[in-house]
Length: 458
Image (tube, rainbow, N blue to C red; front, side):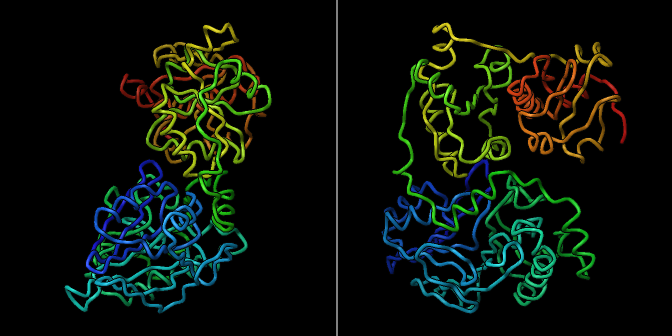
């Protein structure tokens, strides 16, 4: 049996290729939208992709199922309860598939979504005993899936389904089964995930805190106590996956835009995302642009800060970064990428067009100006409770984003977060809303603590 886990950096997504080189057939489970890796595996191993399995209708990334079917002719399989609008074959609890040496059994395991399934996988050449289980977003390494994404009206039912799927359906499986989830560290579909990509059922029963609750009431309280933030992109991604994502060939192509072309799109309402680091953006940037730096969880931050469906313009450091950024955006359904500023910010400067800056202050400067204006701490409640600067105003990043560019504070505002990344997003958002007296604290609370300055308890 052939088996390989593929990780999507940044989003914390896992997909899987499994099959049988001897039989020449292969399945892909939960494919991402850019499909070259799957095609390369199939070609290298002499297999033909015949099956595309979805463990559920995803909320955090656009599925590559449509892209993969167009390239290979493979059939798409989704649970019968998923109200998808595209051609597919419905999965039912207990369905079995034989892909040469790889045997799969479908388990209906609702809870993260009503249409979630898991796949028990057996390598029949090695043993009749099952070897592993693909748990989708039901069970992670160190956590379980969040039950709130289908909506508040289904939340109680989803919590009960999640508990039943974990304790009864997976409870009937042996400790020896290896666990391969659909997400790992960095995903917003859970909160306490391990950096490891796989585990065993036995170890998770021992070490996963969410599997230790003996009653539904205790489980409900724990699973609902601190749900991760829900980016505004999630509803758009769910709708895209229900209808079937458009093929990437229909998205705007690569466009290197001159400053005048860039400015024309900007005047028509396009959103500018500047991916440079905080200090470079702070020194000079295009008025109204958002600073979302190119880092490992950038796609999640875009999904929180930028309205789905927006026409996007990118300021990047060269074509290679543009291609990488566009791929990240396509993975979360931001398809209208109009192009990038050819020559970078330097070409904009040389064209004589307007510029602005976002002040970057040190923690020493911040200490000297405490009490003069507002110190806005945008970290999560848990970060705030772990220690904050006395006199700071706490408004979590997610709450600020809900207000968008309509939020403006009176007087000078210094924005602080954990390391300076989120504070630059918020600072640029406040600037776009018309707040002129905004600075970002370089290094954030990390620098404040390392400078030896005091923090206040909650």
